[in-house]
Length: 196
Image (cartoon, rainbow, N blue to C red; front, top):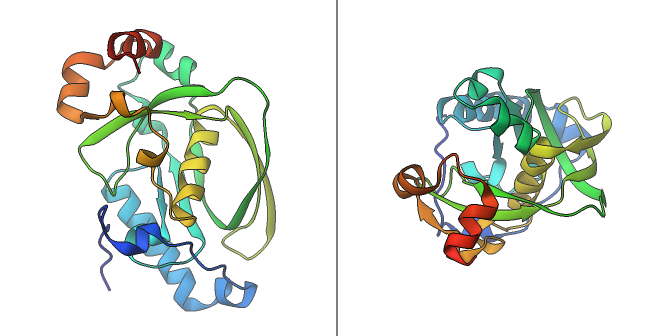
């Protein structure tokens, strides 16, 4: 069965997803779903995809920030975002158990369920996440920078929250206008110009 990314307005994106049991996780059905979600994420392309985004109200997300996605970014851009490649993995029944008390990091964020748009979103720079992996094994993830942002974005999806619920609303922009006016500019400059 082909999976399609559901778009904002679909009720599944606004529901709290149900947890999966270890027996369900290792079952062929969920293993197949993880594989199909991985392909949909690659094809989009994206760095994360939650099960509600493909119509399944399950506490499951896949993540991978491939090195090839960084090729057009400047070293300064990558350093500012603390962005490094992240290997493919699934997070199941995740819970953020610790958030750093450092200052929040603000950057533009987008979503495969709201294609063509972006906005500035403040996220914790560091998080600790407890979850099960794709083999139903307990896992603790300590993440910083862009990886922490991806985790927070995907876990939000599992709780029925979209980035637009957290965005600096004055920064909301089409990707076309983001590229035209703001791409490559420091967030402080963008915020000042938009009074966001």
